[in-house]
Image 1 (cartoon, helix red, strand yellow):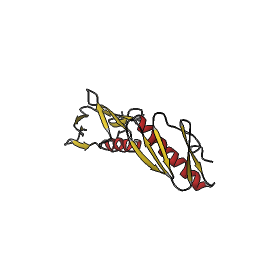
Image 2 (cartoon, one colour):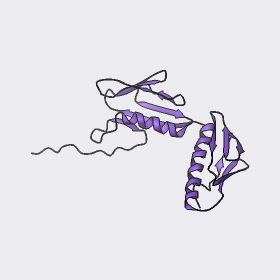
Image 3 (cartoon, rainbow, N blue to C red):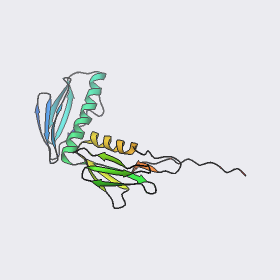
Length: 179
């Protein structure tokens, strides 16, 4: 039995309609649809949504847990935005926002322009080094943050680069002087 799959999904203020294998959700932020595989069924009980397998087996358990997690993220995103924070560390490294474009100055000979998707919003503090991304789509949010982080990965000697705000960079010692 799937440990993740058997957990109920709280609906909160999101309205859900079920028609066969299609689950249509509508919240304050977004609305959408999720299609379940034929091995799973849906039950709405009170303010919770339960996924129930039709048969037993390892493949069914994997689908059960996967679709429960995907559906939970979609329903939670329809109610409130997901948030991730990036921190730019380095002398002269900063970001600036103009419309839906982010301009990054990361110590290269050129500035990097990155186009934000429509669902993702960005706030930058006045120093230009603390970036807060918000989106109702958790998968897209993680993808955008990882793409921006890839422009200048944190390096272990000085600790400069783009890192997640809760990420810990393990520092290495530099060259040892010989006497």
